[in-house]
Length: 314
Image (cartoon, rainbow, N blue to C red; front, side, top):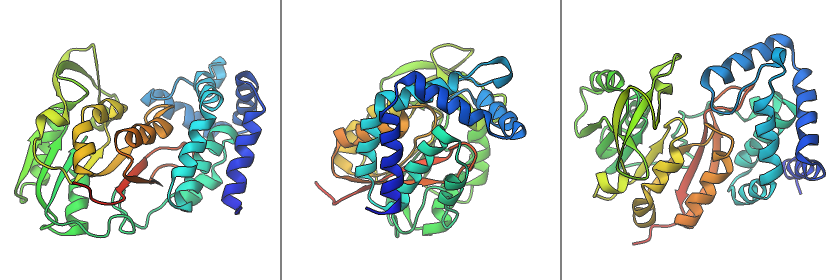
């Protein structure tokens, strides 16, 4: 056993001895030890985005901490499963850092796991080359990830790119940013697990944080990736503000038959971190799993699950 294994299993064993209320009280104690200015920053961030629960220590609102406690209490075995199925110790250390941040508000280990060597989604140790790809970007925003993809692998890395975004103004900016590139298909759809009409809830922070739900004023057509794209897909990136699970369920046929590389954000709620890898494994057990971080050392964000096919199967 090495230090990363030791730290992870010591935390798991500690949590396993407590009920949900004990975990909650301990996390709350650890949180209140954080510097007041940092607490203020954390609370503004989590309440602005409202993905994980509410948090306002001045009003004795610790809903977010209770939700994290519940995740620990109900899903320790799922976190162990994920740890065992991560393929390298960089990923294992990151998983430990996330959980330790949730429990102890440890900022140091999370900072150590930030990886600025490569761009957000494209780790050259995991994806060294791309050629003649069909790349699907769900949550393409203004084309930033697509530009990274082309700049890293070259203009001939793709045959076709499908760029999906729910916000018309973002698509307009994306078309301008990518105007010199050919064979990019722009899609103003939401990707879900069925054909339906959804509604856009606009963020007060940025259009990249717009979300879809079942109520609102701006209609958006939702479809599935399996219905919308019939050709073989090489790479799927998902960063769609908590709708990733539904998008995966709408992409089952592609994941089963195409073995695409998957680059999936897993930080938009309290369950994606463990649940999405298990979903992928159940659909297609031909994947190796990795985690990387390009977010804050104070609160775990921009966590990406990288799923690499073990081998090509036809």
